[in-house]
Length: 204
Image (cartoon, rainbow, N blue to C red):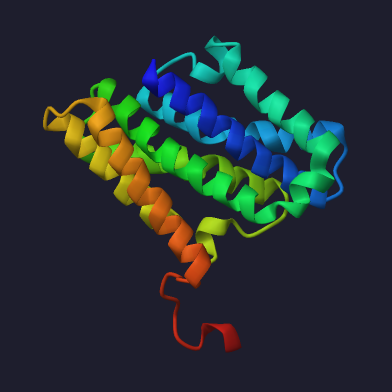
């Protein structure tokens, strides 16, 4: 139950960010709903297919379709207000990243995978939807632009996975795992931390 609730919350906040990207690209209602849905569901869909959890939760549970549609409609109708709250939306995106890296990793662990592939599945869940969103929107994915995005997700998911693998209760490891990812991502945005890039690459 805990993983399902966290999953749905993460889908909603990610779908909001996807809907806002669609609005800024001047897409129509269908386009907004598509980007919202792909952003919210893409990572989890990829994870479920890779771990053999078929049909994916996005197709087996009506709530997984209703949540991103609701977020997409909210973005379409109230985007001026949401646009003025861009910092808050970025916080939502960071929260979605934190929730998904933990949920994805723990779901993979429950399916029988070991701790290392489970942590990687947490990463896929966290960044997959955003990558698909950016590709469809004609942007270089955030995760490839030097921002500290994937690293916090991998570390947060690893903390949760290793904790449960060692026998600790899910709640006791999910919270600190998500917190590490969230705080790291927020600090990176606030302080402008970035991943290393090749020296002189910008001038070539």
